[in-house]
Length: 87
Image (cartoon, rainbow, N blue to C red; front, side, top):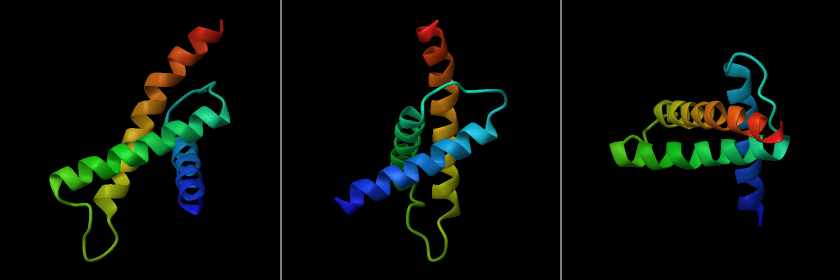
């Protein structure tokens, strides 16, 4: 149960960070921001494991950059689709 809450909290933080990095307004609801951030975290973890940088001796900067990058990518792709869907 706590792991799910942790994933959602990190997803929300990554989603908000992704929205701050992108230019212009992203009119997506907070729950979608959280889900896209969580998906970005999962994709970042998967890719960092695939390229062999998931666990390092210090802070896993490459893994975290990949997580933020995937969150930005997902928000950038989904936000325009979401806004077109509502109009």
